[in-house]
Every structure is written in C-alpha cells, then in structure tokens.
Image (cartoon, rainbow, N blue to C red):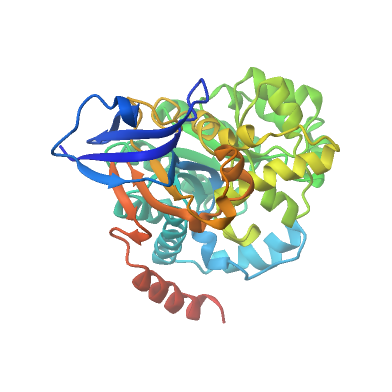
Length: 433
Ligand SMILES: [Zn+2]
C-alpha cells in the first residue's frame, strides 16, 4: 500500500467547521486521507511513507470543475466576441461536426493537463465521443464524471441516446471509482420531451445522474414560455427529471422565484459558470438568492471556447466579484462561499460529497499544494481570501488524485505535454481549413 506524508503545510480543510490548520501534516494511505493533524500532534511517523515537506505551502481539497466540455480546448480562441446562438450555429457546431474520436481524446488530454496544473482534480464533462473522453480520464488518473451530449437535431438522435445509456451502464465506476457516468441531454431547448423522457428512464435503469444546461439565456426562457407556457426548470420538473439524483443543471442564469424554490426542494446541483456567462453576455445568475435559499451551487469553467481557460481559482474570483458588482452589495458571495463552491459544494452538486471536496480522514486523497512563498501571496492575513482573490493556477505545485501524485513540484507525472501539443497541433491542421 503506497503512503505519503505531507508535512508542515497550512491545511485548508473545507470541513464542516471550516478549519484552517496553520501547520499540519496529512497522511495518505492507498487512495484515502488517513489523518490530518497539527504537526506537533502527529501521533506516529509512518516510516514507510514517502515524505513531502510542504513548509510555506497551502494544502486544499482538489477543486471540482462542475461543468465543462474538456475537449473544447481544441476551440480555445477559435471564435470569440459573438452572441451564443450565432457562436454555436455558425462556428462551434460546424467545427464539431468534423471531430473524430481521437480528436476528442487529445483535446481532453490537453484540458486534463491544464486542470491538473491548476489544482483541479475532478471535472464534470458533457461532449461528443464520450468513450474517448473516458479513455483520457482513465489514462491520466484524474477523477471525472462523463456524459455524452445528446442533441435532437443530430442524425440518429434516438440511437445515440441508446448508446449513451449503454455507455453509462458499462463504464460507471471504472478505474477504481475515478470514472462516474451520467446522461447528458444538452438542454431543454435542444431536446424534445420524448427524448428527455427516455433520458429519465435510462437514468433510472442504470442508476446514473443527469447533466444538462438549463436557463442559460433570456431567449431560452422566452422560447420556453412561448412553446410550453413553462420555464425550463418547471418543464423539467413537470416531466419528472428533477426526481433523478443527482441532476447537475449548468448555468441557471434566468430563474423565477418559483424556479429557485423548485431547485432547492429537488436538491438539484447547480454549476455556476461566471466566466462563460460574462463572455457570452448570457446574464448574471442569481447566486446570492440561490445561496440564501439553500441551493447547492458548484463552479464550472464551461468549455475553453467560452472562457477561455479551465482555471477554477479564476472562476472562484469571478464569482466573488461578479455578484458584488451586480447587486451593489460587497458582502455577497464571500471568499469562503466562493472557495466552497469550487470544492465541497461542487462535490455535493455531483453527488460525490461522500468522497471528495474536503480534507479529512476517510475522504479520497484528492488535494492540491500551492506555493505561498510569493510576493502576491504575502503577508498571510487570511489564507482563504488569498486563494480566492490573489492566487492563480500557476501557484499550484503538487497535485494528488485518489492517493496518486499527478504533479510533483510542477512536473506532471505520467502525462507527456510535448506529445499532447504535437497531437493537438496535427489534428487542427485537418479541423481548421
Ligand atoms: Zn456548457
């Protein structure tokens, strides 16, 4: 059994008491955290454990990217500064029609390398060629929830849905539990009710959750009222989708009071994606009201075409800043709330809070060590404030997932970045003509 002892770190536990231990040790045994103690109280040395001296570093739970399309790294910077529908219809969807399975594999690998470098240890993905995404997850050692995207306008939509259901059943819990599967109907406006009903049935048959975009734009809200006389949230609730667990609803920008009450009552996990919402001018999600009402809100980057990176620390900062500006109230979305969204609340939104999102014994050993011996992180009045308002992805030095180091001292363990750059570069020659 492999074990590691991380010594002398400042540990941001994100546990129920919100404890920050100024100088503490973390013992990892096999895939789990076996102990977290103030350094002076560490009860035993584990002589067989490999040691990491984390003096000057901050340890935090690995972050959870609650909504992304990882392989869209291939489209980073390909189409910017456009409204959502022309952006999708004229640029993104035509590009995606040319994608082949291995393009998705290498685009996902690029995104995984970026996320590991930024302290993200788990991501929730929805995209084409979900088997390729899943292979990249298993080959890299990161944790992920993967769903295939379902769009009614694609040829053979019903057949694709059946394949996605088979995939969800066959691949769930592969890779020592690192891979979780879901069903991914793109959005209420791209999936008619008969397809959504089959998704619900499929989720019940296979015991997996559902990942869907909901109420992203004002147009979506208007069209839903015109076509169904219901908001998208009310429509999904009406057909029984919100009784599936977990349901991860991405965006939730345009909500009525009744929608908020429904999302709370049905314990729907919400992924707030402030960078994407700002870039596509989709609107400002009512996050302070959702938090006040007791909703479960995680944080997502969305795809790299609408962000344009997968840096969850940046997303936490955007979340903390955006809602202060929007409401004129500097007390809303505190640094603690923003960091919780990036960690334990993201885990809760995905139904993974029994495994990840906190640093405490019994949790899976998914964590990041950040180098705080830097001018922009000094002095240390408040470590959590620094993580949200001052730190950046490049400050992450070492990352563990499931007890295995995926990066030590900025060196990726197992992923070959030069190969990833080469593969992606070659594929783009065919994709962009
Ligand atoms: Zn999305």
